[in-house]
Image (cartoon, rainbow, N blue to C red; front, side, top):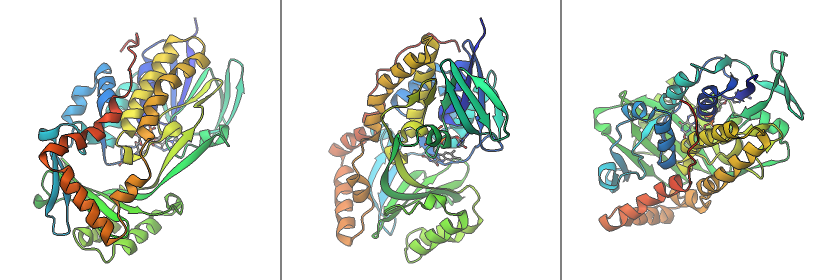
Length: 397
Ligand SMILES: Cc1cc2nc3c(=O)[nH]c(=O)nc-3n(C[C@H](O)[C@H](O)[C@H](O)COP(=O)(O)OP(=O)(O)OC[C@H]3O[C@@H](n4cnc5c(N)ncnc54)[C@H](O)[C@@H]3O)c2cc1C
């Protein structure tokens, strides 16, 4: 029997996880990626709960553990770097710092190195048109080549153009009112091994994370209504940060001095993707393209890995793709809802605007950091990642 032809668009965490599993079963898998080469960038991401179980099943957990960032925990600090509250991994386990915290590029590459053994990869390509039929879809790419596939998996991230093309009025964005920049600057001995979270007034704040490569990972955030800043040029985005943080103390003068020379710069407006249905006939969405929960949730990478596994498992199990997508959605939907469930008041409280708001946040963090409370507080981080009954599929690896 001819192998079913599967096209996956987007060679990142979700797409590569689907490719990893399906290419090891009886499927002919092609992955196309818009970028000219594999994208290794990005900063620290967390893999929790069910995400770790899937990595174990892929035989990749050990490799991932070897590459953890080595962060010992998270400190909430004031302008003099005095610790207001400490959440150490060896004290509370998975919490603000996950036990398995890894660079996005590392985890993405670990999966890619395995999936490319069986799946075909093509870079610099993206879909410009799809025509769906009863038994498959005819796809046209940017190089004007057309091909026919039985199944299409769209894993193009939060801004997915194929989703926008096929589900034009069937998705909406829930803006979290947080604009975020991620990049790395040279580290110093005094940066230590704990992540530091600092907030000031005006909705401004930053997290500094020590990297195992001697670099300091910087996350700058501003709580504000979106102006679609993700579409600005990198130069304009950097100017925006310089202007917003120009008068702030703490580590900001050091960070702003380095900003111009940075090339690994990721900037986004945090928005969740909300959809009533993730599939149309023989085409299905996966990862952030379907349900982006934003980095605020701490569960985006976990959802991408788990979703990739469940989707592949259901496609392998069901002859009819529509049935497979239905089952995938039924299993993933509650898990995704939980991951997206963060009330918008949370970023507002964590990035205060007024002096009063800042004092309140520090008061709350002082209490959260006390011995009887910090374990309960840390459970808030873990809670979402375990809210799924992960099926065990009969899949070859
Ligand atoms: C370079 C990069 C850096 C990141 N850095 C961070 C970070 O520091 N912290 C964090 O929390 N999250 C980061 N993320 C997001 C994080 O990877 C995702 O939130 C999460 O892992 C879900 O992954 P995903 O595979 O669904 O989507 P993504 O990781 O966003 O991947 C989508 C992939 O699809 C490709 N693509 C986009 N459009 C098309 C198209 N039309 N056709 C084909 N391919 C397309 C993209 O180039 C990308 O490779 C980053 C993502 C990328 C791509």
